[in-house]
Amino acid sequence: MNLDWLWNNAMLIVLIVPIIGAFLIAAVMKWSKKIADYIAIGATLVNLLIIIAMALRFDFNSGSFQYEWYAPWLPNLGINFHFGVDGIGMVLLILTGIICFLAAWSSLYHIPEDKNRPLYFIVYLLFSVGILGTFISLNLIIFYLFWELVLPTMMLLIGWWGPHPEKARHAAIKFFIFTFVGSIFMLLGFIYLYMMSPIHTFEMIELAQSGIPTHAQVFAFGLIFIGLAVKLPLFPLHTWLPDAHVEAPAPVSVLLAGLLLKMGGYGFVRMAWIIPHGFTGLLWIYLPIAVISGVYAAIVAMGQDNFKRLVAYTSINHMSYVFFGIVAATYAIINGIGHDYIQFAIIGSVFEMFAHGVAIGLMFLMAGVLLNHIGTYHISELGGLGKATPRIAVLIIFGSLAVFGLPGLIVFAAEVQVFIGALSIFISANMLWTLVILLAPCIIVGTYLWAIRRLIMSEETPIVKEAKDLSIRETMPYIAFSLLIILFGILPGIITSYMTTTVVNQFLRSW
Image (cartoon, rainbow, N blue to C red; front, side, top):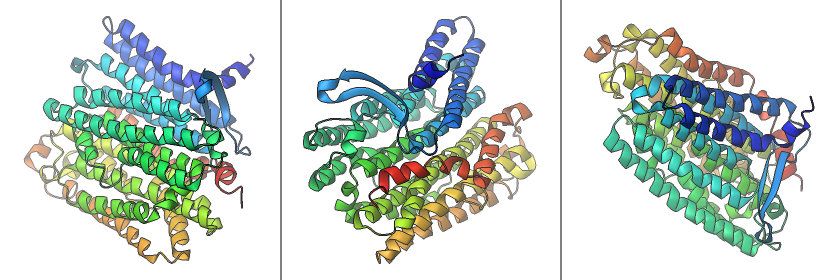
């Protein structure tokens, strides 16, 4: 069988599979809800297998984009359906395949059938189309179209299926307003780049090579930064996130933290390639924001009694490291310093996104388990889990160790690269004040150890005594997350090796 057609159209296929799945669910949902469940999980599994096949066939020696697919749309304006992945895009595509499948699987235990689960899966699959399209688009306008598709689908997932309907609708609207307004600024930045580019195009590859004037890069990035910073999110544009997480059902929180936030980080990485001077032009703004976001989120996380809100602030903390690493790398590239550390900073930042998506996914699912099995997120009401629900307790302890960066687990492998790369660059530039960001992981460690003490090791509270532990069947998706945390913590090179040649080709070629 000739597989050339499959590989030549792989980008299109991964977009079409969830769309077909959504149509099939719509066709059968009135007759069999169980078949609708199987179709949803099957569609995400098929996409995961296709992505794994692409990853196994990926050429590690090529720094260019692979699996490219192109179709003109408005060629006179430089707007075309242009898809493809380099090493950075491949990593995020792998993450998307993993998260979409495991979150769909866990939805069987978190989304009741009487809340119209087939319709939930239709919206879920359409959300996955937006995420996939964002990570594979090589044209800024097409990137923006998929970026926007994510907004209404996520709003529905939060507002319609959140456990507290009135609060969920409020959080969903707040999410939509923040992210939609931010995306308008981002679109204006893209249009400005088109106007200032010598070749007038929205094609990323051509823009990166077009020699956009420095002042235009600075202004364009100022606009684009707003949209990306809302999505990542960074302080002070983060206030939509804790409410959205608390009111979203657990699998939707996994999508929100594991994938949606990564859109912002991915956008920053692409802008560092296309308009690197944009980062350094206003470094005195962007760098303090990165440091403040990390430390602020860690401090606020420590003060939370709501376990899910605590995990949400941890997400803000981790995403600040992504931005910190990217800012450091662009500063080094523009100023010709720290050559040996640029790869650490960029690869570490992208791997931080991957690691966070896997580790935080487990923690949000465990927050959902607390609500479903015990009836509350509040730590003060949840003492004694170690005695009453040992399976829940073990998974919470393991997830906490992963999230705060225990050596040997996935997050440590990411953060050590970010901090070594970024801080080495800033120390060589005599910016010693950036060491303040190291307070953040120390606070996060204390926060989770204190949470474990209160949740697991204290005396049983009345509602915990009546709690029912997880069944073996229900633990399966959580065990899958745990195994990935261990695998990629011990062997991070499985993921980071995809990025080495891409980083050299896009960021270090001039050296």
